[in-house]
Length: 384
Image (cartoon, rainbow, N blue to C red; front, side, top):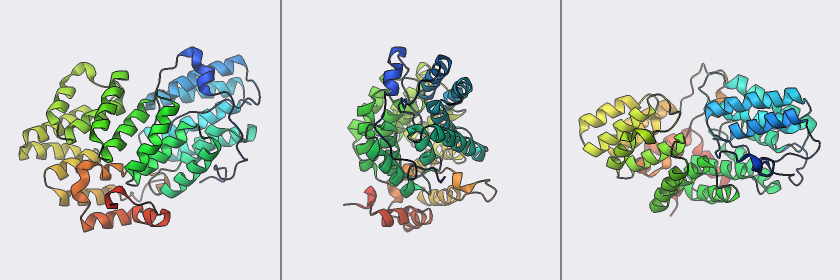
């Protein structure tokens, strides 16, 4: 990670007026992304009105939590720094938006996005060493996969200085989910929502954590309540659909998918079709339906593939697919930026995997065993 990471910047002082204060009059649509913008204007200087207008528009777009809106946010923040090149908060927000794109945009330009995020963060910190968005962007440029302990450490250090930063709570929760500690994840998604209840991604993450922690009724209510607020938010919609499919209610999932009006805005191509295939396979119980669904899911829906294999008694097939998924191609430009996910391995549908020696070997190979040993954090599936 860059030498400008949170551990090396100047000590952080109390935050200034929050973005919520800045934008209260605008009635911002409410959302978040895999990484979420949260912080305050520093109060060090007042930018010109044109720059502030672009900044406000960028924050609004960033909070939508979708890749397209992150691209729009980048455009707004670029305009803000063009209008006022000394606007530290706009540079920091630009860094954070580049980081969001690094996680949400299709692969292939990771190195360029990471470079842009670091450059914008460096400029923000030159202007204001206390800039929280820039500091947080630098923490979160590396993926959690392979960097869990470092990201958790740096987020916790930053949270000591900014206890009201829901973004930091959320990403500590993300680390917990990716390292098989869903109970600990709930304990961080809850305060994130207490700080700002209008964050659909946080509702989604909390529901996922509740489900993995065995708190089924609460997960169900959280997903249903979230969809009442944001009926077409993609991550929330698919979380509800997958929950129904793999928590024993595939018929309900099928009805949800059949309701065209409820389909999420901006769903990835083919995602609804794949969700329907999985629901139909579990609803019918027919081997042919499961086989057709698995053929469609195998290449690019590894979580649903794993869960459906487990549900249909094909656990050994899962281990072969997972070993392939966690092998980073040698032609990847910057392997340290490759993003792989592990939280789905510890969701209830994957439980048949946990006792297998091959699964233990896999978690050791991808670094989870070392994380648990070094940190002393015991994964939920191994705790009593």
